[in-house]
Picture: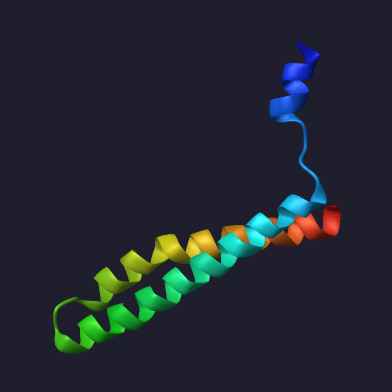
Length: 77
């Protein structure tokens, strides 16, 4: 049973830190596209500013989370 736990729940190596790096890049791209698209729609009058801010909260948190995890992974590993 110990080998099952080691196979599925043991810490991964430092080479897996790059996954957080790529996830942060993808989240940043999503955030940037959301900001550009949202500002465009606010200027056209199709969306209000409050809706833009609410819609950008999730991509911003995702970007910050992945960036923090990458930073912790690199410095701790």
